[in-house]
Image (cartoon, rainbow, N blue to C red):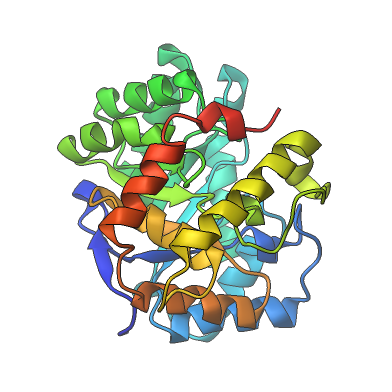
Length: 319
Protein backbone atom coordinates (compact mmCIF):
# COMPACT_ATOMS: atom_id res chain seq x y z
CA UNK A 1 0.00 0.00 0.00
CA UNK A 2 1.08 3.55 -0.64
CA UNK A 3 -0.48 6.65 0.78
CA UNK A 4 -0.08 8.63 4.01
CA UNK A 5 3.34 8.95 5.58
CA UNK A 6 4.17 6.34 8.19
CA UNK A 7 5.97 6.48 11.50
CA UNK A 8 7.51 3.79 13.70
CA UNK A 9 5.42 2.72 16.69
CA UNK A 10 8.03 2.70 19.42
CA UNK A 11 10.03 -0.46 19.95
CA UNK A 12 7.44 -2.58 18.14
CA UNK A 13 9.03 -1.60 14.83
CA UNK A 14 5.55 -1.46 13.28
CA UNK A 15 5.25 1.15 10.53
CA UNK A 16 1.88 2.81 11.10
CA UNK A 17 0.05 5.51 9.19
CA UNK A 18 0.27 8.97 10.71
CA UNK A 19 -3.51 8.97 10.66
CA UNK A 20 -5.03 5.90 12.24
CA UNK A 21 -8.63 4.84 11.74
CA UNK A 22 -10.64 5.00 14.96
CA UNK A 23 -13.38 2.43 14.48
CA UNK A 24 -15.52 3.39 17.49
CA UNK A 25 -18.07 5.41 15.46
CA UNK A 26 -18.84 2.61 12.99
CA UNK A 27 -19.71 0.26 15.85
CA UNK A 28 -23.08 1.91 16.34
CA UNK A 29 -22.64 2.89 19.99
CA UNK A 30 -22.38 6.39 21.51
CA UNK A 31 -22.27 8.13 18.13
CA UNK A 32 -25.49 6.58 16.86
CA UNK A 33 -26.25 3.75 14.42
CA UNK A 34 -24.26 3.37 11.21
CA UNK A 35 -25.63 1.07 8.47
CA UNK A 36 -23.25 -1.84 7.89
CA UNK A 37 -22.91 -0.96 4.21
CA UNK A 38 -21.74 2.55 5.07
CA UNK A 39 -19.39 1.24 7.74
CA UNK A 40 -17.80 -1.06 5.15
CA UNK A 41 -17.40 1.85 2.73
CA UNK A 42 -15.69 3.88 5.45
CA UNK A 43 -13.21 1.08 6.16
CA UNK A 44 -12.45 0.56 2.48
CA UNK A 45 -12.00 4.31 1.94
CA UNK A 46 -9.34 4.32 4.64
CA UNK A 47 -7.54 1.25 3.31
CA UNK A 48 -7.69 2.35 -0.32
CA UNK A 49 -6.23 5.73 0.65
CA UNK A 50 -3.21 3.87 2.01
CA UNK A 51 -4.06 3.79 5.70
CA UNK A 52 -2.82 0.75 7.61
CA UNK A 53 -3.46 1.36 11.34
CA UNK A 54 -6.90 0.40 12.66
CA UNK A 55 -8.03 0.95 16.25
CA UNK A 56 -11.07 -0.79 17.71
CA UNK A 57 -12.20 -2.40 20.99
CA UNK A 58 -14.47 -5.06 22.43
CA UNK A 59 -16.65 -2.23 23.77
CA UNK A 60 -17.28 -0.65 20.37
CA UNK A 61 -20.46 -2.48 19.44
CA UNK A 62 -20.31 -4.12 16.00
CA UNK A 63 -16.95 -2.56 15.12
CA UNK A 64 -14.83 -5.71 15.44
CA UNK A 65 -17.30 -7.89 13.55
CA UNK A 66 -17.54 -5.49 10.61
CA UNK A 67 -13.77 -5.04 10.46
CA UNK A 68 -13.25 -8.79 10.52
CA UNK A 69 -15.67 -9.24 7.65
CA UNK A 70 -13.97 -6.61 5.49
CA UNK A 71 -10.41 -7.72 6.20
CA UNK A 72 -11.28 -11.34 5.42
CA UNK A 73 -13.22 -10.57 2.23
CA UNK A 74 -10.59 -8.15 0.91
CA UNK A 75 -7.70 -10.38 2.07
CA UNK A 76 -6.03 -7.40 3.73
CA UNK A 77 -5.40 -8.68 7.24
CA UNK A 78 -1.64 -9.01 6.77
CA UNK A 79 -1.40 -5.47 5.36
CA UNK A 80 -2.78 -3.69 8.41
CA UNK A 81 -1.61 -3.10 11.96
CA UNK A 82 -4.70 -4.06 13.95
CA UNK A 83 -5.24 -2.81 17.49
CA UNK A 84 -8.06 -3.71 19.85
CA UNK A 85 -8.67 -3.54 23.59
CA UNK A 86 -10.01 -5.43 26.57
CA UNK A 87 -13.71 -5.05 27.33
CA UNK A 88 -13.19 -3.91 30.89
CA UNK A 89 -10.44 -2.48 33.03
CA UNK A 90 -9.50 -0.73 36.20
CA UNK A 91 -9.95 -3.49 38.77
CA UNK A 92 -8.57 -6.81 39.93
CA UNK A 93 -11.97 -8.39 39.26
CA UNK A 94 -11.72 -7.65 35.54
CA UNK A 95 -8.36 -9.38 35.02
CA UNK A 96 -9.57 -13.02 34.84
CA UNK A 97 -11.83 -12.06 31.90
CA UNK A 98 -8.98 -10.80 29.69
CA UNK A 99 -8.30 -14.12 27.97
CA UNK A 100 -11.98 -14.66 27.13
CA UNK A 101 -12.24 -11.08 25.85
CA UNK A 102 -9.24 -11.56 23.58
CA UNK A 103 -10.59 -14.87 22.26
CA UNK A 104 -13.87 -13.15 21.39
CA UNK A 105 -12.02 -10.33 19.64
CA UNK A 106 -10.01 -12.86 17.63
CA UNK A 107 -13.24 -14.60 16.60
CA UNK A 108 -15.01 -11.40 15.57
CA UNK A 109 -11.98 -9.98 13.77
CA UNK A 110 -11.45 -13.35 12.02
CA UNK A 111 -7.76 -13.36 12.78
CA UNK A 112 -5.30 -15.53 14.68
CA UNK A 113 -3.42 -12.64 16.26
CA UNK A 114 -3.76 -9.01 17.34
CA UNK A 115 -0.88 -6.70 16.47
CA UNK A 116 -1.44 -4.37 19.44
CA UNK A 117 -3.64 -5.32 22.38
CA UNK A 118 -4.43 -2.61 24.91
CA UNK A 119 -5.65 -2.74 28.46
CA UNK A 120 -8.75 -0.55 28.15
CA UNK A 121 -8.93 1.93 31.04
CA UNK A 122 -6.12 0.02 32.78
CA UNK A 123 -5.79 -0.53 36.53
CA UNK A 124 -4.29 2.22 38.69
CA UNK A 125 -2.71 0.00 41.31
CA UNK A 126 0.76 -1.38 40.65
CA UNK A 127 -0.19 -4.91 41.78
CA UNK A 128 -3.27 -5.00 39.54
CA UNK A 129 -1.28 -3.52 36.65
CA UNK A 130 1.32 -6.26 36.92
CA UNK A 131 -1.28 -9.00 37.19
CA UNK A 132 -3.03 -7.72 34.06
CA UNK A 133 0.26 -7.46 32.19
CA UNK A 134 1.16 -11.00 33.29
CA UNK A 135 -1.94 -12.19 31.44
CA UNK A 136 -1.08 -10.18 28.33
CA UNK A 137 2.49 -11.47 28.31
CA UNK A 138 1.22 -15.05 28.52
CA UNK A 139 -1.08 -14.40 25.57
CA UNK A 140 1.84 -12.86 23.70
CA UNK A 141 3.95 -15.96 24.35
CA UNK A 142 1.13 -17.99 22.77
CA UNK A 143 1.33 -15.89 19.60
CA UNK A 144 -2.08 -14.27 20.05
CA UNK A 145 -0.67 -10.78 20.67
CA UNK A 146 2.34 -9.15 19.04
CA UNK A 147 2.61 -6.04 21.24
CA UNK A 148 1.17 -4.84 24.55
CA UNK A 149 -0.41 -1.47 25.23
CA UNK A 150 -2.39 0.59 27.72
CA UNK A 151 -5.18 2.92 26.62
CA UNK A 152 -5.01 5.38 29.48
CA UNK A 153 -8.40 6.15 30.96
CA UNK A 154 -10.37 9.25 30.31
CA UNK A 155 -12.29 11.29 29.60
CA UNK A 156 -10.79 13.73 32.12
CA UNK A 157 -7.07 14.50 31.93
CA UNK A 158 -5.44 15.42 35.23
CA UNK A 159 -2.19 15.15 37.17
CA UNK A 160 -3.26 11.59 38.03
CA UNK A 161 -3.52 10.79 34.31
CA UNK A 162 0.09 11.83 33.80
CA UNK A 163 1.17 9.81 36.84
CA UNK A 164 -0.62 6.71 35.50
CA UNK A 165 1.12 7.11 32.15
CA UNK A 166 4.45 7.35 33.93
CA UNK A 167 3.66 4.23 35.96
CA UNK A 168 2.98 2.14 32.87
CA UNK A 169 6.05 3.44 31.05
CA UNK A 170 8.19 2.83 34.12
CA UNK A 171 7.01 -0.79 34.29
CA UNK A 172 9.01 -1.52 31.15
CA UNK A 173 6.28 -3.96 30.13
CA UNK A 174 4.25 -2.07 27.54
CA UNK A 175 5.07 -1.21 23.95
CA UNK A 176 2.51 1.57 23.35
CA UNK A 177 0.32 4.08 25.16
CA UNK A 178 -2.89 5.59 23.84
CA UNK A 179 -3.64 8.98 25.40
CA UNK A 180 -5.81 12.05 25.03
CA UNK A 181 -3.99 15.01 23.48
CA UNK A 182 -5.46 18.07 21.77
CA UNK A 183 -5.09 21.83 21.42
CA UNK A 184 -7.30 22.27 24.47
CA UNK A 185 -5.85 19.44 26.56
CA UNK A 186 -2.08 19.32 26.26
CA UNK A 187 -1.18 17.99 29.71
CA UNK A 188 -0.19 14.50 28.54
CA UNK A 189 2.63 16.07 26.53
CA UNK A 190 4.53 15.97 29.82
CA UNK A 191 5.18 12.24 29.30
CA UNK A 192 6.02 12.31 25.58
CA UNK A 193 9.77 12.58 26.06
CA UNK A 194 9.83 9.86 28.71
CA UNK A 195 7.82 7.47 26.53
CA UNK A 196 10.07 8.13 23.55
CA UNK A 197 13.21 7.56 25.63
CA UNK A 198 11.86 4.19 26.81
CA UNK A 199 10.76 3.07 23.35
CA UNK A 200 7.05 3.28 24.09
CA UNK A 201 5.00 4.26 21.05
CA UNK A 202 2.48 7.08 21.47
CA UNK A 203 -0.95 6.90 19.89
CA UNK A 204 -3.13 9.99 20.24
CA UNK A 205 -6.90 10.03 20.52
CA UNK A 206 -9.49 12.81 20.86
CA UNK A 207 -7.48 15.37 18.86
CA UNK A 208 -10.75 16.91 17.61
CA UNK A 209 -12.30 16.58 21.09
CA UNK A 210 -15.21 14.38 19.97
CA UNK A 211 -16.15 16.99 17.37
CA UNK A 212 -15.99 20.02 19.67
CA UNK A 213 -12.94 21.27 17.73
CA UNK A 214 -14.47 20.60 14.32
CA UNK A 215 -15.80 24.13 13.90
CA UNK A 216 -19.35 22.84 13.45
CA UNK A 217 -20.66 24.30 16.70
CA UNK A 218 -21.05 27.82 18.04
CA UNK A 219 -21.48 29.32 21.55
CA UNK A 220 -24.91 28.61 22.97
CA UNK A 221 -25.23 25.18 21.42
CA UNK A 222 -25.28 22.20 23.78
CA UNK A 223 -24.36 18.74 22.54
CA UNK A 224 -25.94 16.09 24.77
CA UNK A 225 -25.63 12.87 22.78
CA UNK A 226 -23.58 9.89 23.95
CA UNK A 227 -20.42 10.52 25.94
CA UNK A 228 -20.35 14.22 24.99
CA UNK A 229 -23.02 14.95 27.59
CA UNK A 230 -20.23 14.64 30.18
CA UNK A 231 -19.13 18.17 29.27
CA UNK A 232 -21.12 20.85 31.09
CA UNK A 233 -23.04 23.33 28.94
CA UNK A 234 -20.80 26.14 30.22
CA UNK A 235 -17.66 24.22 29.26
CA UNK A 236 -19.02 23.49 25.81
CA UNK A 237 -19.85 27.15 25.25
CA UNK A 238 -16.36 28.18 26.36
CA UNK A 239 -14.82 25.66 23.95
CA UNK A 240 -16.89 26.98 21.06
CA UNK A 241 -15.85 30.54 21.89
CA UNK A 242 -12.19 29.50 21.84
CA UNK A 243 -12.67 27.72 18.51
CA UNK A 244 -13.83 30.99 16.95
CA UNK A 245 -10.71 32.72 18.28
CA UNK A 246 -8.41 30.00 16.96
CA UNK A 247 -10.04 29.98 13.55
CA UNK A 248 -9.15 33.64 13.03
CA UNK A 249 -5.40 33.03 13.07
CA UNK A 250 -4.90 29.30 12.49
CA UNK A 251 -6.92 28.63 9.35
CA UNK A 252 -4.53 29.83 6.71
CA UNK A 253 -4.11 28.40 3.22
CA UNK A 254 -3.85 25.49 2.50
CA UNK A 255 -5.83 24.83 5.68
CA UNK A 256 -9.58 25.19 5.27
CA UNK A 257 -11.09 23.89 8.52
CA UNK A 258 -10.64 23.77 12.26
CA UNK A 259 -10.59 19.97 12.18
CA UNK A 260 -7.52 20.04 9.96
CA UNK A 261 -5.77 22.39 12.37
CA UNK A 262 -6.65 20.19 15.35
CA UNK A 263 -5.34 16.97 13.82
CA UNK A 264 -2.14 18.55 12.49
CA UNK A 265 -1.49 20.02 15.95
CA UNK A 266 -1.64 16.53 17.45
CA UNK A 267 0.67 15.16 14.75
CA UNK A 268 3.34 17.79 15.37
CA UNK A 269 5.32 16.20 18.25
CA UNK A 270 8.08 13.95 16.91
CA UNK A 271 7.36 11.44 19.68
CA UNK A 272 3.85 10.78 18.36
CA UNK A 273 3.47 7.70 16.16
CA UNK A 274 -0.13 8.13 15.03
CA UNK A 275 -3.28 10.17 15.62
CA UNK A 276 -6.51 8.17 15.71
CA UNK A 277 -9.45 9.84 13.98
CA UNK A 278 -12.91 8.35 13.59
CA UNK A 279 -15.43 8.63 10.77
CA UNK A 280 -19.06 7.61 10.30
CA UNK A 281 -19.29 8.26 6.55
CA UNK A 282 -17.08 7.72 3.55
CA UNK A 283 -17.03 11.48 2.93
CA UNK A 284 -15.72 12.13 6.45
CA UNK A 285 -13.02 9.53 5.92
CA UNK A 286 -11.87 11.11 2.66
CA UNK A 287 -11.58 14.48 4.40
CA UNK A 288 -9.64 12.90 7.23
CA UNK A 289 -7.13 11.23 4.93
CA UNK A 290 -6.51 14.49 3.07
CA UNK A 291 -5.19 16.03 6.29
CA UNK A 292 -1.98 14.02 6.14
CA UNK A 293 -0.97 15.75 2.91
CA UNK A 294 -1.10 19.19 4.55
CA UNK A 295 2.16 20.85 5.58
CA UNK A 296 2.88 21.23 9.31
CA UNK A 297 1.33 24.18 11.08
CA UNK A 298 3.70 27.16 11.12
CA UNK A 299 5.92 27.76 14.13
CA UNK A 300 4.07 30.94 15.07
CA UNK A 301 0.69 29.20 15.09
CA UNK A 302 2.01 26.24 17.05
CA UNK A 303 3.67 28.58 19.51
CA UNK A 304 0.48 30.54 20.09
CA UNK A 305 -1.63 27.40 20.54
CA UNK A 306 0.81 26.07 23.11
CA UNK A 307 1.09 29.42 24.91
CA UNK A 308 -2.65 30.07 25.02
CA UNK A 309 -3.83 26.58 25.98
CA UNK A 310 -0.84 24.66 27.36
CA UNK A 311 -1.85 25.13 31.00
CA UNK A 312 -5.64 24.88 30.64
CA UNK A 313 -6.23 21.14 30.30
CA UNK A 314 -8.42 20.84 33.42
CA UNK A 315 -10.50 23.81 32.28
CA UNK A 316 -11.68 21.91 29.23
CA UNK A 317 -12.09 18.46 30.76
CA UNK A 318 -15.56 16.99 31.33
CA UNK A 319 -17.29 16.75 34.68
